[in-house]
Amino acid sequence: MQTIKAYIDRISLWLGNVAAALLIVLVILIAYNVIMRYALRSSSIGIEELSWHIYAAVFLLAIPFALKTDSHVRVDLFYENFSAKTKALIDLLGACVFLIPTCLVVMWSGWHFMLASYQLGVQPESIGDFFSMLTGDGIGEQSQDPGGLLNRWIIKGVIPLSFTFLLLSSFSFMLERWQALQNARNGVNHSGVE
Image 1: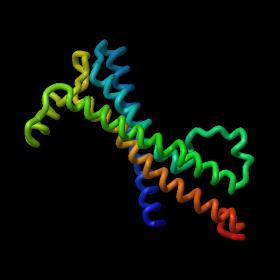
Image 2 (image 1 turned 135 degrees about the vertical axis):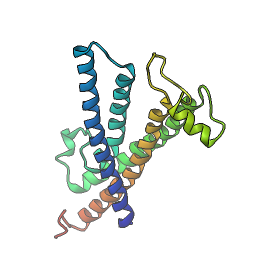
Image 3 (image 1 turned 90 degrees about the vertical axis):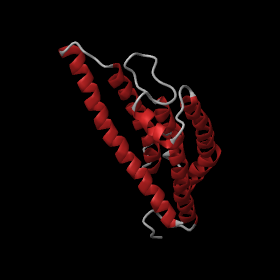
């Protein structure tokens, strides 16, 4: 079980690194677009839309990382004063009642959201057509703005993907909290010393 947890934790940390790298790309894109707009009186709808898509990907891919590193938003008004056992129980209950069902709902609805976007418009008839259309005229939903992005189903696909990773991360989170609960019951502190 610890091997699976370690593997899930590595995925969550990797997603955090991907989100951080995308954040750097986002800053570069926004700076480029601002310079082009104000210095050269030229801007690109495609780059503006790409920056929105990258921002969404940063946010979505960082969620499992935030859960893993315990850097997610929490109302600490009472929580910070609770015992380790009570904190572990609250976290386990919250994960079972709120986190996992939310992940499942968003994965299901996000999949259908992406699929509807993919099926909107011209469809490829073969694998060769898929790659040709993907890099050419696009597949499925496209931007309504001239010069906007094609293949909107890709960014919409990040929604169920990120919540799938969040679901995995929640299992690691719950295992960690279960161990903390067992340690609290056995009188063991975080360092493993009684």
